[in-house]
Image 1: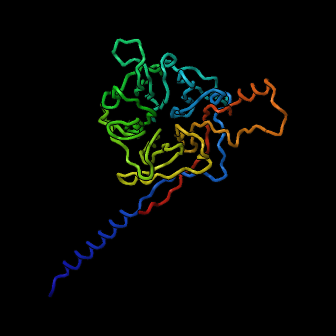
Image 2: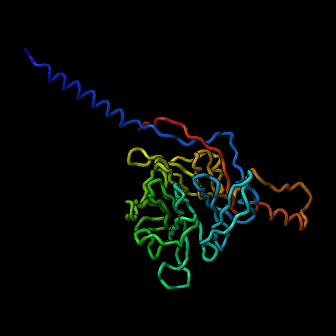
Image 3: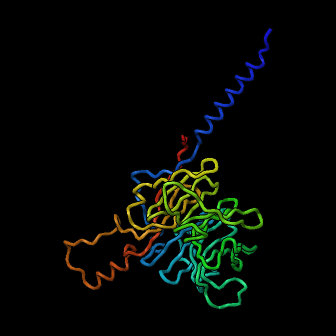
Length: 324
């Protein structure tokens, strides 16, 4: 009598093969979505968003303290606390206010802040600013104050190049962008893996559908990346070990004006970004009477005078299946 083992093995092989093939073609992903009727609004009008230049947003894990940047020339990092139902008057953070500092990012555990600065290189003995912007960090002390900032290692901070827009996932892997770095043309984004002790050599992010990848914001779980390319905000999702083709966010956000510094709140309900957009917010009426000087000053002291503001718009995540 012929053995049935070869037949059973064949059936088992076919089952495993097609199961693997099916899994290779699909992947469950939480897609970021914006309601078509949603309208962006100023974030903390008159307190955070003012007639001056603001950009870059990052919150503590409890979302009760926000860090941003202000200043068109002398970039300075400020913070504001949420109290009694509103954001309070900002203060300059303890380590800023002397050099040009910007792009603050609070780690997801709230214990570290990354930022860029042109302050003198650490241990250089110099009192002159650097010609480039490097990534620095400070840690929370036992008294909940920021410690003295330190410069990241030379694998990340190259003497002749500036880095911008640091962002870290929950494992402290660091994402940032840099212009014409190590043979990569244009503004590209990189990831430096953290092994628990130090950062390894950065690797360029390869994302199909765009030529440049600027201002990266990485999700805490490393599953999606928001970034800017050609004044347009995109998202890419991690599928296995690759990034999906870049997808533009909706026209609610991308209206053609310059855009930067995307950030998703830790509760995943709000997108913050920076723009000088005035469309939909303000328009001078040419049929009205001629503006007086006082009217002109009032117009220029408005948030929508061409300076960068921080806008916010509600978002949600939808569980869907991505098919190759």
